[in-house]
Length: 340
Image (cartoon, rainbow, N blue to C red; front, side):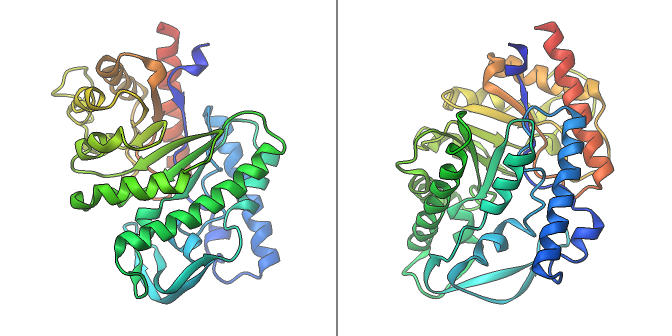
């Protein structure tokens, strides 16, 4: 079926409505829960209207930020103060002061609500163990590797818990996206990335696992070790490094030119390609996105091994701009599907 080709997917966060973001840290629990549900439903509606094949978890309306959401649910983590993220939002950075332990699930309420209300496929993003270790201070474990493996054990318990919820009412494969934005920031630690990610999913069957890495100067280091990752796919960024000129030449599609080399290194996993830049308000025209996808198809060959996504989460854009980018992304895929 053509809708199994070039699957369009939401890849992470989406801008929260003002009524939620303005009170996220201070609303009473019952009120906050109600607002999260309202925002998730509104975002599901946007994603359905855009025509996405896979709606993720409706833009992560249940999470303030990918690191703090996990760290705040653990014993052994102490928060000293806020730090600024790349989009001028603040989150609390934790220090691991004793053995970390999962107090409770940090994602089950979100999964249950999305499962009960989504009409499309779901892909569940969860912050990876290496990024959790890289973004934490370590005052307890012997070294960073030991800390990353401790986080991996925490995440494995969480994934098993979520899969249990999923399997009670769904027969299809549970899709899990391991978010590792820190993965290629320290090239000498790629062994640690591979070891901790594999440990986080060890022994878990019946899931499709992918890794999301954003903004790498050199993806080749990821792919060179990729064969050792027990995963099914990559979700990556490309658009922010590409030109906005129409065309199918390597000069026009300079960010995608590395795809052929990457595919030659590891052709065992699907590649989700970022075709729209989440850091600018410019809404890429359908034709430009088509050109990016067609170039990728020429490099990879099999459109069933390509998925289509924004570079990263769209929380940095307004909800209107985010929707427009997703809609044009879907329209571009639909035009290409007509030709296949």
